[in-house]
Image 1: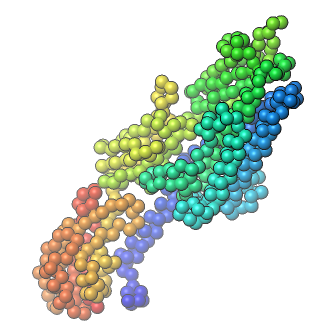
Image 2: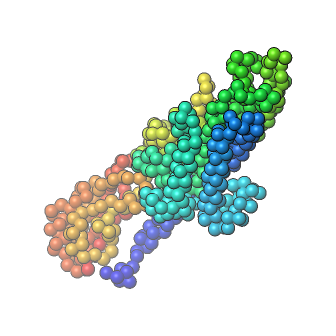
Length: 530
């Protein structure tokens, strides 16, 4: 029947309005703190990538000096190094264009304006940090398998670049290079256990702030592999062909991104060095002695932000010690952790609540995750970085995250979550919860169904108890007691006898689900046969 002949009841209007409000709340489920964590990590990676570029440029300069000293020997390797430099700059520039392109697409601003704002204000200049619809379309092109969009194009360009790098490297280094290259071919599982390809796993339904971090991470991985490859090409040249007046000290840090409280570690080597020599160095007022031509640095990471250092390494020669100055820099970051509920920002009683936990720079296997503040609450690992939370009582709880760093366990942070009951179910016969209906429609559905529209978790409720009365004249029939979703033969027989204008009254409805037995949102339904 047309909607004009069957207007919505006040109850139906109220339910519709509540659903709209609930949908709006779901759209806001990413907290400002989590978004700011992404922006902080994204800005930090920008600094780290800048430091990596500077370090790699120093390696190229060392290579070029060696070439100027001995063109015949160094020439073939230097030509490959120049190809590496050109190809890497091209892929890094492309990734920057993708990064600014998705910001432009999401915020609706020209790329030139976006670049200017980010340069002046950092990624805090982005307006729609929590938007995921526009970035998903940008990267996945409206597909459900990533077969279109910018992510697939990006994957192809990364694959082509990495294949070119493998063709340029020495056979002895090829296997090692493969291990540090970006894996775009493996399938990954998300928090729901679905198997996803590279583009869907990284860019489907991720907020814009997270996309920026992912792209910056890709750049960092490419820059690291570039640095390793350039040094491998350089190492393939015989050290005996160099003159000692071209020797330069080189600093190779294990990481330029250090968490506060940890230690910065690096190796200082001398190109074309004698492995039988013992090095001596002065760094930050300390005198250090090395072994096998290597001087190892280790600084405590106390103050936050960029840190610089200078020193001198002394190489023994027949005529005495020769000093070589060196310098380096690294970045010290405060401990940070990102905790996000996979489906929403609350935990529900009676269901498995998926949770993902990650901390920049820390392997998920080294995280220690616990739950506190609610009786009977439990948390257990699901897969890499994913957990399942179960709660029993309403209130609040906290997710606490620590990390195993060396022989110590350090607290990274915690986040408070609300605990709620599953929203009330609605009992219907077919799509009807009351009003005018044909008896054929009632008979076709053969009973009740419990509607959980708007609730993201897969839960099942069944009708456990009800009373149903048939009003066919001045007096109503004796109520029939029923249990379960299906009509009894007696109820079906009574419905078949109904005529136009007769009424059916369903009362005292009860349902049962994963959180126990309870009353639905509509304990009474009244139908009029038309």
